[in-house]
Image 1 (cartoon, rainbow, N blue to C red):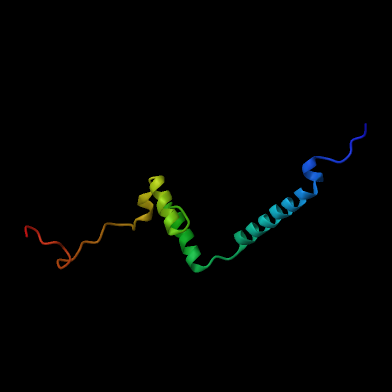
Image 2: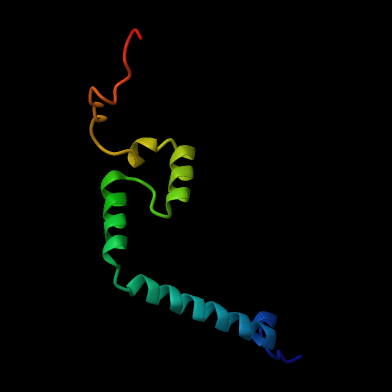
Length: 93
């Protein structure tokens, strides 16, 4: 008996459209990776790398930081600012 064809995934015409979709998606990913970053995107990447914080939109970053106990990476560095006398609550009053 002679072997004809190959693996069904390779000979099925329906799979070719899937393969084309995958190739197109991969090409788009490569284009995105090779694109130049805007100043805002570059600043976000630098901040993420310097602080070890997740990179993404604010809501996602906050939820992931909370889940992974990385809250310190999303807080500003240094001590909290001391409120002026006008803003501070009055003691004993």
